Image (cartoon, one colour):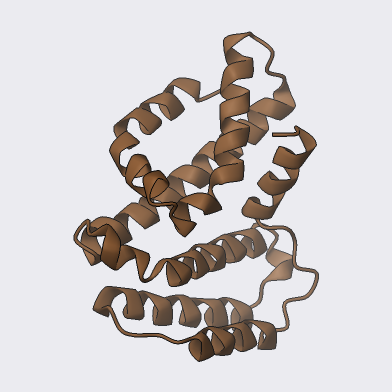
Amino acid sequence: MLYINDYKSYKEANKKFFDVLSTNNSMVFDRFSDILKVLGYIELMHDTNKVDEDLETIFETGYFYLYGQMETVKLFYHNYFNSNYEEFSKYEVLINYYLYLEDLLDTLSDDGKLINKNVKEGIDKIIKKIDTILMEHLTYSDKMLEDINCEINSLSIKNTPLTTQEVFGMIAEELDL
């Protein structure tokens, strides 16, 4: 089942929020550009009745991914930063990191063989650290970001599959969008 009407409703309901992010050239919004391009392409193909089973699967995956990640972004924007874009923008690097880690954790969890207790606990610890910084508007440094990278690398994640974000980048490239 293709959720085109749900997607259109979601876009309409969040138009003002998307406009705020887009108008300000938000790093967070840029993160979703390939997904939005692919979903938009499939939406146009649907309108001309040219959507096959593969495109349906891609659409559903992308829409549900966009929905979940965008709801997290909205939570940060509205609840942590009181809908103040200027404050929100100071933390976009960390918000992107948070979203990446959620995506990575979901991707690893999809194949139970790729995740173990240490990896899950390590990623959860980093996510909680970032969440605390965002919630309390604490300062952070490039050094802290380097430390997070080191923590992730120390988790020894083997054969890391592509995240949803990376897959949609490849799909957008394949479709020449």
